[in-house]
Image (cartoon, rainbow, N blue to C red; front, top):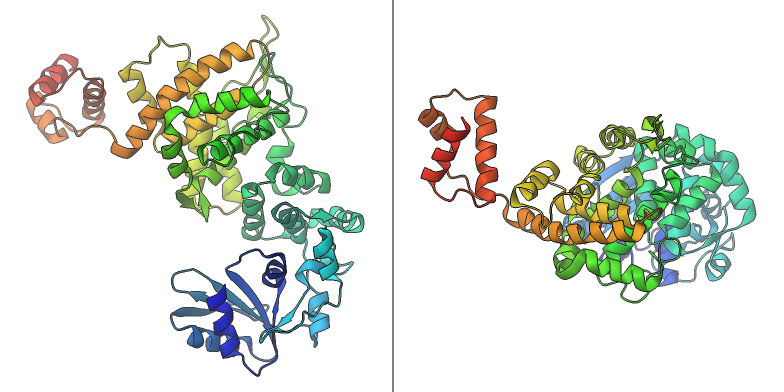
Length: 489
């Protein structure tokens, strides 16, 4: 933030301007930030252009015609400054229009004592979230979600009147743009305290507006192999997903509260995580840290897979007449469609939609392999990789979290068998992701010419079966591949 602040100070020297919002709050809390919010008297566009000139290599553009805001952004995206006009005719009036008192503290751009007409410094010290004005949520219902997001990111506690006002205005979230809703949801789901955030969202009545598919899971009972309804199970899968990621990245070694408590003892949880990841921890950690889409890493996108993996169970629930067993036939396929619908509604990118849909579609696949002869054959590994790419590693991790959170009848035996297959498959998946399938021994045009067949589905099928045989080590030369193809044809 230092470069951005210095540029703003040079550009706005001698001009009435103040640092406000989250940047001022975070400076007081000792938290790093790369985003600055500045309010100025006069033309914000002129101020933004001056900051861009002072910074050197920076972009400058209008952010909102309605509110007159401008943004200055470093070319390397290392920082940004949002410049807004002073609202209400005075700094005090401007601060009173903000969301929470902790975000309504100003600091002269040149430096100096904080300006705090609403008592935000006291709320910061107390770890308290308080609305800046009684109509804060009515003026912008998105602040209901922002209340949750700030609470989980800072670990602050909303005070009762603020909670009540937020609850009364949660219905207004339906009028907010999907892009703004998704921006807040992304940060809630990515937060360390996401489970607390989801509880708070539900308590405020926000979940039924912005993520009704999650709220619809409450009370949907499952079969005897589950110990929780679909909603409770989903939250436990999310908890286990976070624990797997933390364990891979070295954030937990002895504290297993993330997967203990409601699933199993701490020692057992730690052993389960170790068994699942085995020697692959560093490679898994590197993959989870990779940027994916919409500002999310693969690890953060995996949380969306956990949240939505069983979203279609209410739509597919049935009971077998012969024994009364509850079933959810096809919830993986229908769930993939539903996950795509949810993320489309939230205006997520196509890459994120496809990624999460693939996680949901394939989250049962590894569990089916537990019943295959062990060790898993190379042919079966090939089929798994082809079916699950490009989420072959991610969905293997999701399946482990799903299995750890399923603790009904015969759970210990089932978990042990699942983890044994998962560790083996995780190694194959990491190798597949790094190297892909082996280079083909025959090109499609060569095979078509040798066999005298036309390009089309039949040729594609033969090439795929050759690739499987090559991966399994059944053919190793061009001649062997051609002989195998002739036999298949």
